[in-house]
Amino acid sequence: MEPGSDEEYRDKLPGDLPYVFDNLYHGKRAKRCIEGPQICTQAKELKPVVVYGKDFVAVKQNHTYTLAAPGKKTGSKWEQTIVFPAGKRYFISADKITAVNASDAMFLRIDMPGHVKHKGGDTFSEVYLSYHGTIAPKEFEKDFAPDEKFLYTRDDKKVPKRIIRAYHIRDPKTGKDGPWLAGMTLDPSAVYEAWCHQRGYVCMIEEIGGRAVKAGDTFGAAFIVGYFDSVEEMEKVYDELAGNQGLEVSEKGWTLKTAP
Image (cartoon, rainbow, N blue to C red; front, side, top):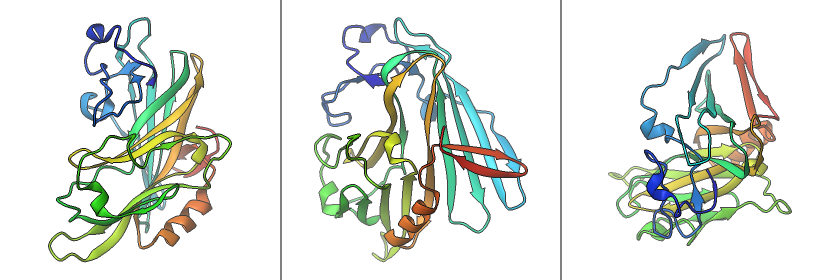
């Protein structure tokens, strides 16, 4: 995707490429798709490769985009690597795009750490955004657009130390708190925009990249996703692995990389 409107040619866009904004789902910020389809709902079947290591299991998968906006090519490649370390309640992952198109500000949109189904905040007791603070469930009683509240937009002059987005799980039957479920982007400068809004559920979206890209360039980000007992524990794990955008894996082991 990239900033800008597709209104002039929206009726010519194939598949799920049309992007309608100025609504509660997408807000008022004009954006448009470059290639598709949306992987999580339209790519259908992927062919993952499983890597077994001494103290971890990893999954590698990819998809080549088959749809493109007018004047754009198809063929950009999405790659994802996920590592599940033994004895941890979290996994490490990385997403990478190798682009066949150029853009002044290309980005990849992902769910991070995911969405929260609830009825009046019964499944979570608080949301934590490292660049904002904690948010009470009452803030999500009514639907609101991504750019109404809690929108993060990158300012290269003031990049936050951490990008941690989490919610404190609550048992809807007993009302007791459980662990936090967190999604942490290990290089804050990789995050172009991020929001946490209500659209029938709490929707947590991040946009990765948002910088000039030439055909053949790559961009991406690395993440930690999983369960933690406290914000302090999240910060400790984050700081141990911070500053990385890529992830490599083989049977011999895995390593985070500063580049995608």
